[in-house]
Image (cartoon, rainbow, N blue to C red):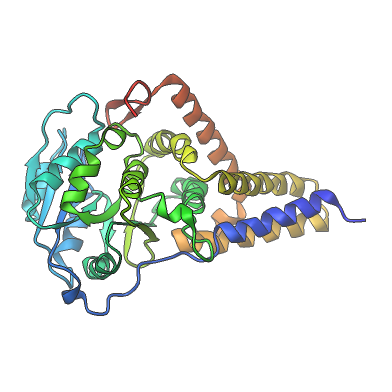
Length: 362
């Protein structure tokens, strides 16, 4: 007789492969100089003096030219402006945050408004671009238009940073970024660390009330492009662009907690159920191995191998993170529940600001 529990675990394991099989990455540029005119690059930065040098150095070594690099100093308390100036960027002093805006959306809007080129590449201050970033983005945007975004490859330096493993996996699974075949979910989401669009479109959509007050402004922005019948395309970073997401444990919890409950609401329902089933199976596999036995060990090994194959596409997580997948699943569930508490409370804290989640016009 078939063991129903083992069958359920097997189905969930197969669902995992469907959710994260092979990462879709930006195609290689064939004729980068002919792809588009040099874009403006806009970098919103709030207290990013320690990270700016990397992104600005990377932009200075591009194989395709950029028209300008604008760093929007979002009321920083450190030497962000001085670092940007020393690296040759044009520094724009951010204005006071108006009512109804979140900090990043407002900084982004100011930078795009000041941009001179007709196409704008928006980067987070903590990304590490390869020398081919602008060339490959340029060709991709010339082919597709609308909104193009890239989720960077996650580079980690300390063991605790690997606690972000399941957050990375769920983000990719939720938008179908590594699922085989076409996915409508990939047309409904975007990744804020790396965006490309026309300047006029960005100005229109970032200023929309649903984007300017959103805690997940990238998802809201993708929805606005979709509502305007403009294509939305997202990719994984691969060897093109990387980042170190959080340099302190507190920021990891704070950052993911502010995003994940809101992000879950934007995930298609069937895909969300599949993700929940897979995470549940990971937890069951972890509990099952505690009882020992060859079958339990085989199930544990199957999920560990699966996590290793998935995670190696998303960052330098390594074999230890894959072997500890039940622990990482528990961390994810705990932070996700904390994010639900924040949604109920109606506000989150991020970089010294309080962001309200309720009471804004939709």
